Length: 188
Image 1 (cartoon, rainbow, N blue to C red):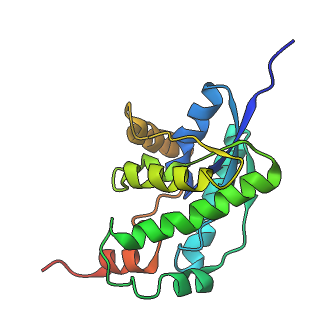
Image 2 (image 1 turned 45 degrees about the vertical axis):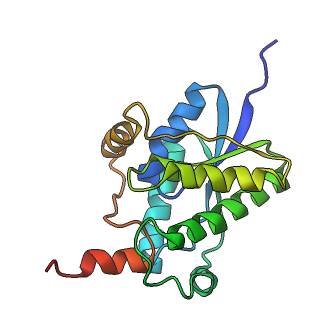
């Protein structure tokens, strides 16, 4: 008799970042369920492009996808006062907290014992901060945070290759309005 596959809810920030993590989790014997909760993405047209790519990826990898409502106005209220904080600052940590809290709540609601996030694949995101946030929330829910640093062992390179093979939309900024404005500013 085959042992049941362990389910894991994986918060997916975008298809590019979640391609390798989903595939790796499958290879490790997990049944990943992608959770697309990204109220930080701005504007809504960008959100739609990223969601469409996530749907395409999940279909290709035979991975269930759960999509939450787009709550950008609520997200912006939460981020009030952090608009001028640079990438990697308290602004990003606050964003991680909001999205990972919602993710662990969803995992708990669905009775899924494990959760993780694809954000850790980005070389621009601090894994230790993500790990700390995930572990903090695990203490309050009956859900384990799987602290995968997906960028290790060429994870970022692997995810980029997969995205190219699947012809997935690739964005050029993290997602929030502040990160978008930074790419639009002329270099001095």
